[in-house]
Image (cartoon, protein in one colour):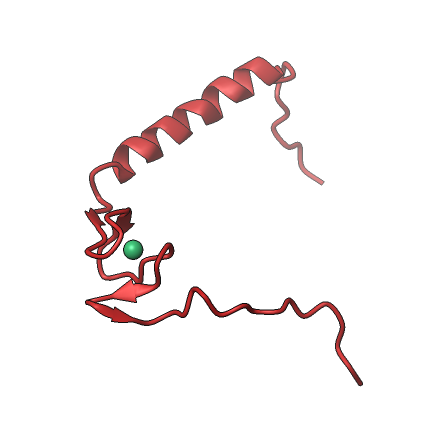
Length: 79
Ligand SMILES: [Zn+2]
């Protein structure tokens, strides 16, 4: 087996955090301004365009998701 490159020093936690922290800031900077938020016509909350409003369930003036309907969680599957 050939020799493989081995790092001379252990990368400290602070150094890794600094590096990955910069990736995060770069990505956030890229993403900011790309997502267009519009206000819902019904409840005026900020939502991405062309999406059903998660707060009131309205889309283009009609009710798509019934928010008043109670949905039971499935905790057990009956065999
Ligand atoms: Zn809404």
